[in-house]
Length: 280
View 1 (cartoon, rainbow, N blue to C red):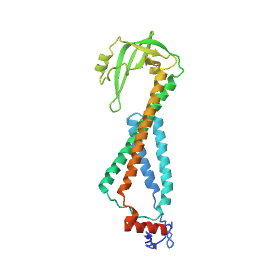
View 2 (cartoon, rainbow, N blue to C red):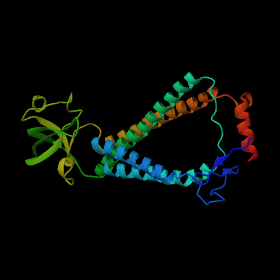
View 3 (cartoon, helix red, strand yellow):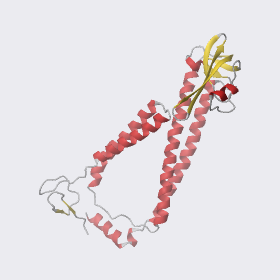
View 4 (spheres, rainbow, N blue to C red):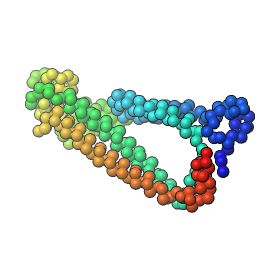
């Protein structure tokens, strides 16, 4: 049975579902989907940028994902008008609706996990790689940082900036306090002062050609540049494993969902819809 639709203006029955305009009144029969696509893209961009600003993601990451969102919107707005003229086919019937809902929820959750792995691992890897490039090839030497004052400053929601001022070779310097020097993460100024009292001598690397806190790095057996390079590679390796696992599970769930759909040959209504699609 061929599909029929009506002109919204003059009410003419149209058996040719591929026609773009009514032959009587000339009304466009192509759904206006472009506006909805761009509104959806703006909502996604607003949500994404708010989330990334709250958690202090680099601004270039916001620009990158914004370009991805609006590029996808452009592609969808280009494809949907062409798809809208296709013959409507009756939705498939489900043999196991409860199982289908469970699998659908699993697909949605796994997609969120996959997106999160890509997003956070990319940010962590880029941060480590940027730090590696900052310290690679820079001259440095071993020295000691004598603490004169520590600071515990809050920023954002739950964010803490732990740093100290002190003397290195007679000059006033600033450094970020972090693990492995801090055994636990202080939550208050008093806790930080207890862990790092005034007069504490901290072994550090001094990078004389850099500025600000970047000049001082806590001493470790592995030099700073190499430590950041290893951290970036480790993050990338773990991310690839996570993406492979999440992608594999997502593929299996999508394949498993097919068992919930009744085959067209076993359902008369679906068979009629499929035959009508072939005829048109």
